[in-house]
Image (tube, rainbow, N blue to C red; front, side, top):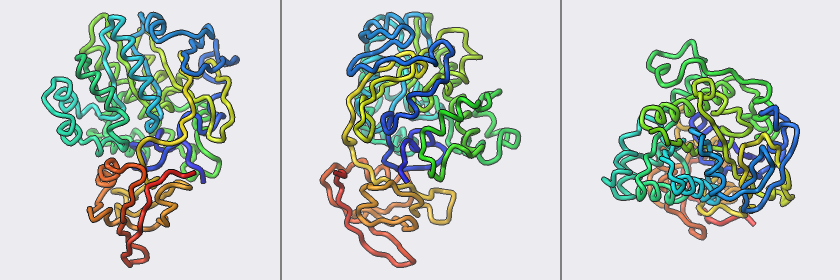
Length: 404
């Protein structure tokens, strides 16, 4: 089974340490006639290192984009979490808006809104980098290497741009998936906005294109769809509340969020629009070739307001094992329940059902431990894993190498 974008779309719902794909893993999701009725029936050309404004189909600069966003209060920028080029686009857009004189606020999918105190300490210069990563529990709340996001966080601190967690505690989204809205406890319900809009047929079409047909977590599961809608609504709502409560007349809230929450305006934008009478826009980078190497020349105009063309990323900069752990839902939290085909772990002989005990002598008791340990690895390292298979412990040598 090829896993395309699972980690990108379901981080709070399924605790994953997969090697995720990106916008470019396949092309089906780029060519749906859905979303904005004025744009959904035409395509625009993709321009490498250029920004296409999809209303007019013209190519513009970051500075011109900032001008066109002068009356926009909410900007959602989609990302593929493990592609550094996407984060550089986010930083470039933030910088263009800041240099245009806007009060830039940054909303972060990476943190729940309950972690706001940690973000305030970072911006106020009260902690070193390492102190922030540890105190903010980066690897508890986010599974991806800090280095992917470091430049954005440093720029924000150096320029006094406030950052806000917009996510909700992942256990709340999981509760919505399991039991729906009406059976939530009062404590769970207080973390999500009222009136989460139900999933539409257009969204079902979009979601299903993110996965291969044989994917065990395919988007036909009503609970998963319900959780996705909740996730979209919560992040949009929290971003809007931060903008209203802390932003001035010239403020723009730039939300850094997985592309799946942004595409076609059907995710966070759709969930937020009923509560906001200002302008909302979206920017999504798209790679000019898919995973097969086939060129991506055009994208549906309704995909986003602005589309930034990127080169195809051959490899992730920082290693990942490419596996999912059972987590707190089972008796063996570090039992492996899923492997990405061709991943580092799979090529080392790790199997679904194995229990991960330690890595280079360091105990692994949770997904947080795993993410923290792997974050220090670099390509070319060789590490020793202690696993338990069929009740017996054994050692496995893992060569941390890219797949040819």
